[in-house]
Length: 549
Image 1 (cartoon, helix red, strand yellow):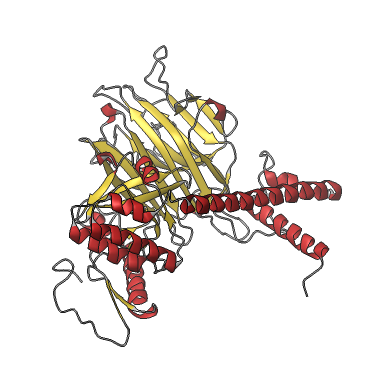
Image 2: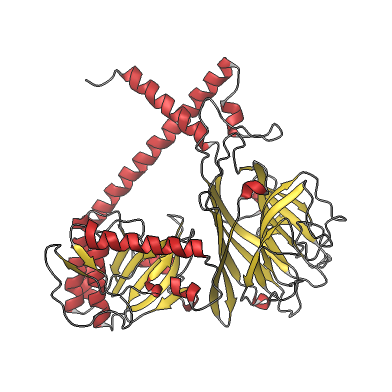
């Protein structure tokens, strides 16, 4: 017997209240393009920083201004609840931003920009924090910041003042800009002024702060990373400001941040009866929801519950309308995979297309069928600048799906490679049915315009071999051990836990990818095969890459 409508309504109201209260303890936002409407609303600037339609200008770029010896800061208007004093619980967080450092073709430039978490209790003072190597965070003549100005920062330095540190470097700095906790070389041509991206995460359990970033040199984007183990509770208070700072010294450069997104997790100790609230000087949603006056509280909850219910209903209706539209489109033949297959002019590939679509539909996965135009737009028409790697099957390209707010890796199978097509078929048949936290997630596929495309989740950590063999490794032994455990967990799942035994047949470091928290994700199932658990493998010929598992 179902509960009366009133009971159901009260339960929904209670759930919405709980959801709203807990969500208000986290910080989450996305500014796809920062422009002047964000000034003083979401982003507050200080010093020589200001906002234009190109983004946050941390240092002056207008030609009618003095351009050197400047420093500025920009912070998000609301603070981050980093940890809870009563329980000691830490929040996880992740941030991604696009930035540009440009010297306008001049070979002399300085000094850089930084992302910070900080406890700035005093107003920004340009005379105390002049431009230069302090990057707008502290007086560069001091070795360490004061207790009232404590910070942890990721710096993109274009003019190193430290011995034995490359001129351009990325570093993690704790309460000091003169001594880095860890740093690595940054391959980036500042004179070309290309946009670059950075992803920074923090894992509250492992206390590891990994950083992934891009640079541009010799016509190609470069990738790099570093990580540092740090307990942020030892250096920062419960509530901190998050934002960017930058400076120019004797030489000029443009320091711009054009997009920014940030997400933090909930502090699990919080509840409706014991909520850690923002400091009294800050305005936040929770202060309007949880107050001591019963009438105001009731009214606010009713409004909040109604708004969330309306938004939820709107989202459900939108999803239903979208699915109906897709069905109508398919019925008209606009999305007919066999038609696209015939356009390939290859009978084998045409039959493969229909077979692969059937595999996805039968598997009932969450993978989506993308249009070619969607993936071409996401990868800048599969440009060389977006290429992540090349194999016997074809290339892999970095893409960004704006509708899903998702970075992806698009595997593009060469139509000239029969081996690549067969490996593609094997990969689709197997990976579309597997689900494990240490396997690379598959988001979708595309069979159009003579193309065979697979869309995977982008792994910002790159491949394991790039950390072990191709650059200075940021992997400490704790991370290496966790990566080994993750790979072992994936193999145990493939060999013992799934309905059939999956033989990957090409386990090597270049096929082990790392996510933003350095967790191992096994990929590239093009050479994999399936056997029943009670049967022995029948294949006796060599497969995969010689010298590996």
